[in-house]
Length: 166
Image (tube, rainbow, N blue to C red; front, top):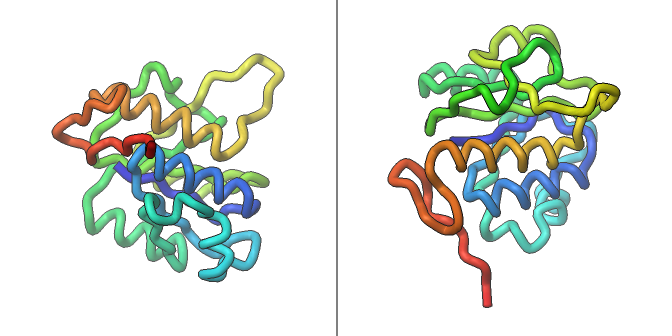
């Protein structure tokens, strides 16, 4: 399983997403361009003390990401508020790539159409959306729960869990 962020807008959210991905032992792809200058120094600052635990890849464009996705024959699961399967009714697969859109605008129609599956996290009736990193954390928790990784027990299909440092 991997997570991908489509052109993130807010550096602090990228930092929190890196932390979530590191804590759930899930590689994270950043699809550029970002809404801020993403230099190596800025990436290190966003990752903070999770840089050693995080597996981060920078992808130059949506086209490059989409080409790699298809070459690897992976399923693209878009988290969206538009016409999607509720999270509690969705079955994850270990090779899925979980895609999250920009904080300001989600993903464009062509990216939405390229997704194999669309998943929505249930919200209160008048709530618009969750923070990007909160959505990523909820999605990764549910995917790991379904695939059998909980409380430090690793599934044969998943990387070993990260233990808390003493």
